[in-house]
Length: 251
Image 1 (tube, rainbow, N blue to C red):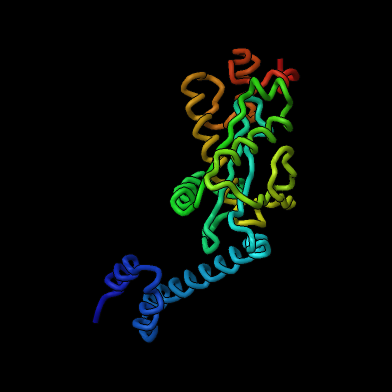
Image 2: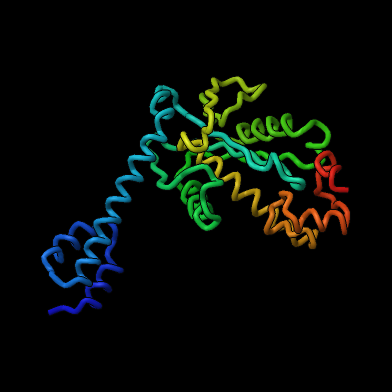
């Protein structure tokens, strides 16, 4: 009789799509260790099906406006930090795209965001990024800078979208139809994907800034007002990527 350790090795090497065959093959084995592996396979399939259902619910707006040729989800990251740019991303996905585990980027681990970022970039019809620096934020305020980053992101798409799904805002100065969705990054697959790509892009920028301007812990805090960041700001003073209009209370 094949050993439990050998069955476990088979389980570990079994492709997800072949799990039903694994369950069928070993479901009559009475050994507790094998039953545990079968139950594990059943749970994996159940979780996968639940995730498929969740993602289908997140495509409600994409399906509602399916008559549009190119539906774009757009989101931004970096409105609140004391340092660094605000970054927006616009994503056009194929209409049949399924990006499992896509969600508001804040709900995902850094490792999961990077994994999804690669998948989104591989599957997307087009991705556009917009970046507005801390200098421009100080000049025109964070709201107007956010709008500008979003306009840049849309302008960098090819083809251009004919519908925008936005996370709660209406962006001035764009000609196409816009649909603002409250908590859109948790309710639309397209917006969630934009949120993820924007977050990964900005985080990478802040890691690079940490090398250029050491001492503020940018690689960890990404420019947000952590205790270590604020203490460094008081000790070292501001560096070139600090937002002057955001740091007055700490100096």
